Length: 211
Image 1 (spheres, rainbow, N blue to C red):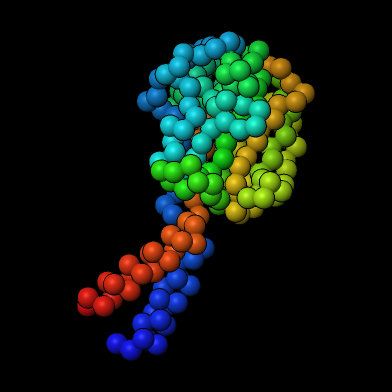
Image 2 (tube, rainbow, N blue to C red):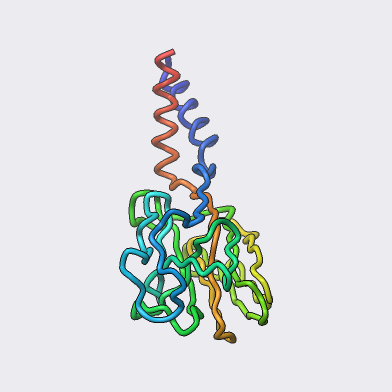
């Protein structure tokens, strides 16, 4: 095979693979150690999530938070699936009063701490009702710019489907309420880095040459 033809196959493979997403992930938090109905104070260490899902491409925590804690407060939070959901930790690692803290997470290349971006980001937040909760949900790009911001008031748990692509991180703020909420069913699809596409393209070329 001539050099020009080989180069053409590489370019075609990379063009076909670049921008495509890796397999999607869905975190339901079921089967994980839980802090039970705790909604204030320092949770048991085994219930705290930070880099536990790094292999899937997500880290919990951010500039103002130290991760999330798994709880199973079913009556109050009404998770969208199963019994577990997660609540935010503040900068000291504690659950703020009534589980009213912010939740932050960011995307990385699976299995590494290298920043990445994701598409198809969705989740549910809220509780079982009886009060009106105010949320500010912000999706950031790789440069820290705001890609999308949702200001939502809701009395019950609701679904959030971010409409933008190439999301680097997400912050869920709870600025005007103190009655608590949790996050459940976090879904996302990591977009591979350009270098990943090149490697995949070369692998595809090698496979074709073997045929």
